[in-house]
Length: 71
Image 1 (tube, rainbow, N blue to C red):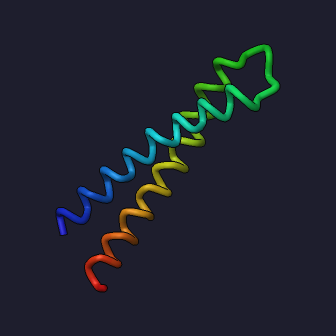
Image 2: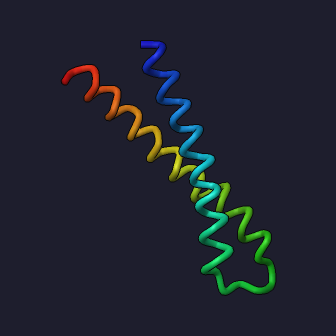
Image 3: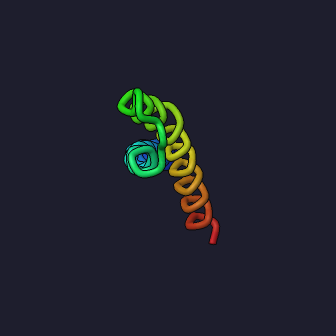
């Protein structure tokens, strides 16, 4: 059970990092904000895309481990 939790948390952490990188890419390329783009980049990446990526990574890890265990 501990291995299950550790793998899920590591996948969430990796998902967070990938989400932040995706957020930086998206804001840099598609934002029309010209006054405070660095602030928008930081806040959007860390507080929106990061947690979304962490949640997706966590769900993928849990589903993968459950399918691997029971199939």
